[in-house]
Length: 140
Image 1 (cartoon, rainbow, N blue to C red):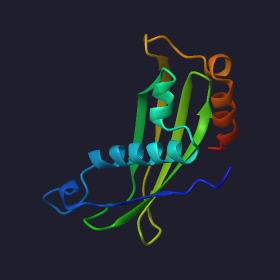
Image 2: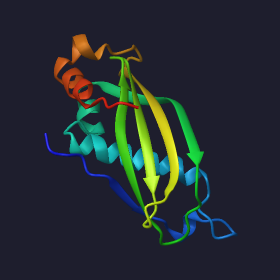
Image 3: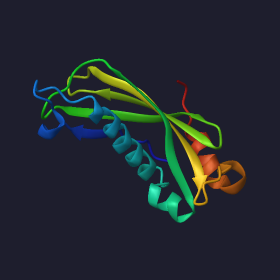
Image 4: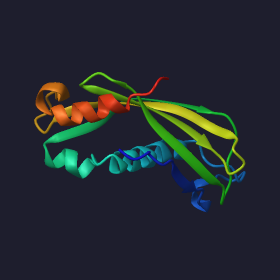
């Protein structure tokens, strides 16, 4: 598998508040953008998962703000899997500005359900997906 590239986001004007600082809610959206990009890079995008009858939903999000960002800043977001338990998957995010300063760190935890709303036991039901996710878990 090729190395997973970090996701880049350019802060848009509408993402800033009256003080010219990025509104805090946007960092969670950027985590989602980075996660979607990560899954695309590993060949298991949401469209593929959903076509298999697997849906994923967020059960927890944590976000720690370290340094403000402003309009036109380039934010590089590194997403990585730090925990995979077969039914749940936990991502870690590190966001840096163009100067290399950490602007935000966070995590998100996701659960896998079938279209009927039942938990999906990935190891048993989708062993190939289980192997991919398990092989991508990094140390926290």
